[in-house]
Image (cartoon, rainbow, N blue to C red; front, side, top):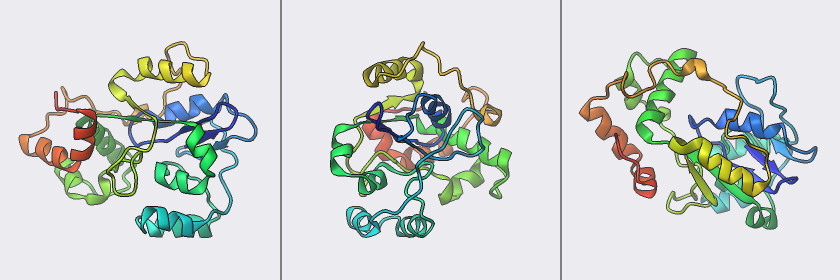
Length: 230
């Protein structure tokens, strides 16, 4: 996640959507007062800064109606005001209203089928969870992502722009031009490429049941952004 006071934007980092590559690229233009959260694994060109500090956890619990209370309290006691993949609603609660209302807020989203495959490949590579196959992945509730760009009830989008991962470079060009970031049509930064494995759907054939499970789990995103299994 990045909050740039220099360019007046907030980048909400979603999962498995080139978020780390985008963050590394953007961090190279950030000013001394901008907020850049740490990433894992560490990337040489990435410079985390200004992400520690206290925040009003009562305000956040009120805004989120207690959703994610454990993470909120954990961040508070760790003095971790901002962190990697922090949802937009938490960012909104932890900064002043004027900054939230006036800065340009954007993120990237991806069709849930290729996103799930990419996430599965990463977990298999890192071996952080006991997952033998893709069916195991679908049974593990903690493996699924959530719409980090929506409010606490997941009913309304609270960012200004959701970039379609399928048209990433083109739409990044439009967004970067709007916020004043130089861009030649290529991020020139590639991270986590070693996780790709068989992430292409032409090589990773999902069953009808797997397609359906993902469709049900990500129904809000599919309805909102019009995704379909191609």
